[in-house]
Length: 205
Image 1 (cartoon, one colour):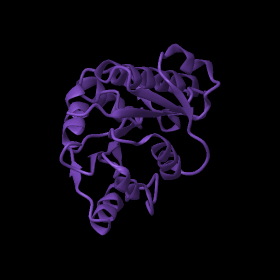
Image 2 (cartoon, rainbow, N blue to C red):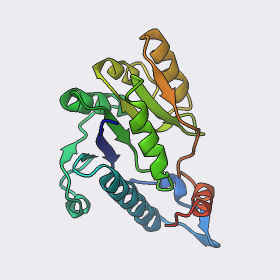
Image 3 (cartoon, rainbow, N blue to C red):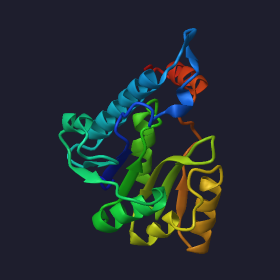
């Protein structure tokens, strides 16, 4: 199994700008405000980044929306700016600069409950596929691994932040004649109900 380069796409935990769909929801009968939502995002990001660093030592880069934010100084790994544009353009720009003979694995920070096995399975499949993705219930994915430069086509012509992301990604794979492997469907933490589900899997904010 080739060790992938891992890129964690991460926003700084700025109050009012992250996990806004949590605001107004409830945990243990208490309403979540903007400050608590930002604290939950911070904890989610810490868990995702440190898990990746543990599984793939020396291979993790954080792609930050604001690299100067002090939150990112806590991690001993390279830091790159995401830059402008939609998610696909930002990932494509990073992939174009970083992908070489090693697969490139992109992660978000919305799945702190993700098992290590899911990440390791994606890395193993890179030996036989052009790309690997982990679909989630809202129509997107929680990870995508690009095994070669041809797989950058999967970041084009996608309606990002929509329920069509995973469907369109599969269509792009067919159009480009790419071998796209799919992991089991999981979920992201976007709402208070998602937090409750995540707790049942052993993670808690």
